[in-house]
Length: 282
Image (tube, rainbow, N blue to C red):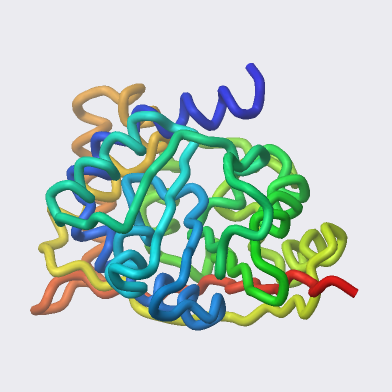
């Protein structure tokens, strides 16, 4: 299977669930969106490109930020994700946002089109991240910024490990290859930064963003959300017997309750924000 086909297969099945839980997901990752806005230097009237937008975030939030004289464009490789994003834009009555099915490595926009280019948890799944960064730089206006968010190490993110460790006791997974299309592909500091430098970006920087994933739902609902968001978890649970599934659920809820509060779930999290600029003509 080709890398792009693999990505589409993995995420097509998740699209209905990301659409179903879109508001909770928006709230959970709002601090990451805010960091991308800050590091991308996004403001009113700007044209902004959101790559791997999924069902429309952060593009929808940014469309509201840049205002009617600005514009947000979101692209994703998965048609089902783009369809969900377009439905959400219609419900919100946003006329300054558009969504298209496209690959990060082949952006359907002219050179020097955007004031900022961002991607939240997308670049880890790009078959050729260096090629994608070169495309980001091509469509970015000279002197303007791109900003990318990637997960820091799994052990610093209970959003991932609190359920995956329970699941691995029942359905073990081999460790991913060093450059596999995996959520933690760029968890090592400096790895993505190096790619941006090699692609020709300037003023490349990286910072650690510690934040809290807040979800105003009880632990049982969070378990459902976490399971439905992940194609890997859904695939593993499909292989379990009814008794095994009951045991996994019990153990996962016990693990997640550590992060349950009277306001819902609150999990510490860490991501890396990697940003850079496009050089101005000499």
